[in-house]
Amino acid sequence: MTYDFDKIIDRHGTDTVKYCAQKDYFGCDGLLALWVADMDFATPPFIIEALRKRLENPVLGYSVTPDAYWQAIIDWVQARHQWDIRREWLCYIPGIVKGIGFVLNCFTKPGDKVIIQPPVYHPFRLVPEQNGREVVVNPLTPDRNMDLEGLEALTRNGDCKVLILANPHNPIGICWPRETLERLAELCYERHILVISDEIHCDMALFGHKHIPFASVSEKAAHCSITFQAPTKTFNIAGIVSSYAIVPDETLRQQFFSWMEASEFAAPNIFAPIATMAAFTQGEEWREQMVAYIEDNVRFVEDFCREHLPQVHPVRPQASFLVWLDCHDLKLNHEKLVSLFVNKAHLALNDGEMFNPGGEGCMRLNVGTPRAVLRQALQQLCEAIES
Image 1 (cartoon, rainbow, N blue to C red):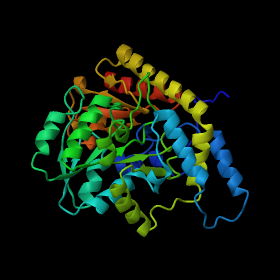
Image 2 (cartoon, rainbow, N blue to C red):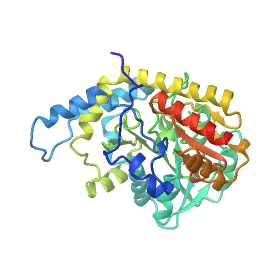
Image 3 (spheres, rainbow, N blue to C red):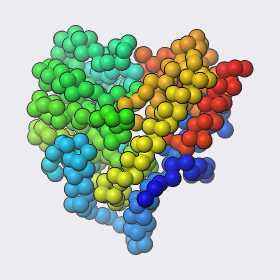
């Protein structure tokens, strides 16, 4: 089956964050929305059909989690990432950002230090801070590599308890090399640092790159980490919260899963298993076509900027539908850069400063949208710069 990613779908009237939150976030509405990290493509029809079939029964009461849900996850992870995981390693979580908060509250106490590697997804900072933990930064190097020497110095005194890893990286879209992950695991294991590996973009590796699950690279990685994954980004079902934790280490697993179960955080809503099973058992062809379309959208952005916006330099992502735009050559401060995009180009993008140190002078562009929308957005930006 050939899927249509060029179809423009009007999302107004669906309470979507991309449009309904513009006034609060940007101070105005009516902007072309290329910010929030969900895609504008139709959710795959086999997922919609699975949900529709369940709704044929008019009773939406308490439900159990079917064994087929866990098996679908196990089979998908093995097929996509060659990582053999076990049923007992798995636990549902009601969202990865919530999962980060759960881990922090389960394994740390107020005042403990949590490491992030900016520029990085902003809840990595917000969740620890709002839970009373101290955030310390281990910024990426200027060439966008992990600064492991800096991390070694930062953790030398032994007071850092958790490191939150974006794998693949958000917003830059890096698929971390195995050697980097192995060195990170060695350091964190020896210094008793728990790694939370956020792998929500793991199924969208681009241009021949490959995602490597952190916990799969070594025994030490497996024993010092909790991995979060989900079908939600890949299959555009963020509104159906369907994330899961993978915890190979028995000690970590018993502590975390017991904490989750005590407050029934590990109980999925009625639709999460249904959507996940449909995605992971029927979704590979759709995923491949979606990834190919995203790759063409990335190439389109690169070509357009090269020909018409030479001051804007897209960083090609190795995974995900997010493109990091280096706008330093526009020579605008943060306020003027945001004003250019919002007030002159009438575009809603995430500004780089929200991703913490290292994001200055950059913008994050969501290319998970029909190409006609992307073309219109870049043309509006071009006209705004020319004016």
